[in-house]
Length: 144
Image (spheres, rainbow, N blue to C red):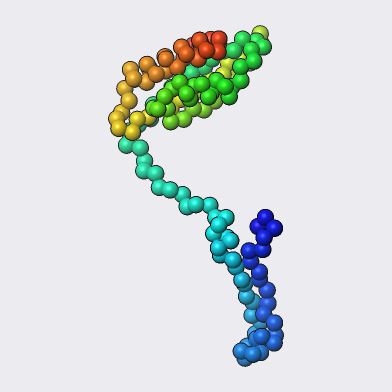
């Protein structure tokens, strides 16, 4: 592993087998367990299933033709603006209009550890995020 020998395997020499009265072929292995353990992935940690449901919302923004804003920059801002209730943000759609504009759509998943989120609560976060992103990046919120 990375040039280090962590195991050797082979047939035991006939002279060594004869010293123990063994006529049959014998194979042996020497394994550096410490070296293997140091490279092992840690075991997966148990995470209990969430007690409260997640809520999904989609947000899509239209970038003007030639606008140099990256999807990564928008996604980072979405995650930062959404706050502690955001569990996942995933870019799920990219659409290029014939006139050169680009639509980018994200799915945001919200969840609280201590309660079921209300629609009003999630809608308020979604509206705040959409407003701040449009103001900060000069993009347009795409409606359904």
